[in-house]
Amino acid sequence: MGRKSAKIANKKGAADKARAALYTRMLKDVFMASKKGGPDLGSNFLLKVAVERAKKFNVPKDNIDKAIKKGQGSDGVGYEDITYEGYGPDGVAIFIEASTNNATRTVSNVRSYFRKCSGSLGVTGSLQFVFEHKSVFTIPTDGIDEDDFTLSMIDGGAEDVENEGDMFKVTGAMEAFGAIQEKLQELNLTPEEASLVRIPLNKKEVTNEESLELIDKLLDMLEDDEDVVTVYHNLEEDDDEESNED
Image (tube, rainbow, N blue to C red; front, side, top):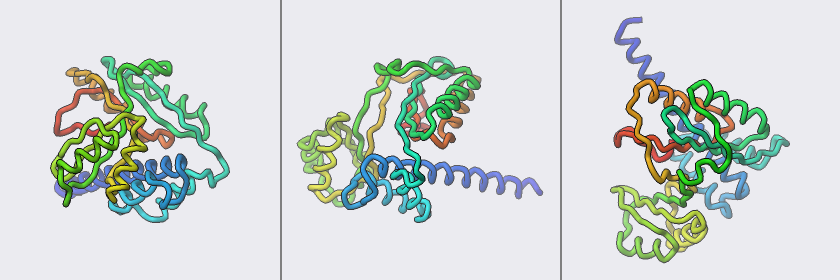
């Protein structure tokens, strides 16, 4: 294979990996929404949002249907939600949300990832003052009056409304999730995303290249685990690299 062909193949491989990771994340969102609120899109607001978003990114319908059924325990095995808290290299805090049918397997895997990357798994509650639990919604700005929308969202329990260009980002307390959701439905608006997220209260700056490589490796291993739903961290990142949570 020539150098040019190899370069094209590498780019394609990276693109395929990114698409697979996106599909996995979308399907985990569908699974969790189905598990928590039932399989009916008409009555399960979160599932409706998750399914519509997955379709927008061309996730195959069969995969979406399987994720919904899995959330209902159609395979005869129940899943339980578990969280794990730990520290990566240089004291970077990492909070993991998982859903598993075998807690022994999951904790063993998670512990091994931390150990392999010079980190340590902590006890539950060790990061309670590092992250705060928030309701976050993103809504397309098309055709929406910003002032009216902001007032409506505050009336619905939101703490903050940010205009990010093509999207409004609405943030509120964890307890306000239902009220904000109802206000959006009242306004006949369907968000692109709707979720409870853990936002770091402070960021950890890491400059050591070896530590950064280990942190990236640890985050990748956690996110690739089939039982892990979401991974949060407080690593300070460059603006062009920073993601919402992972």
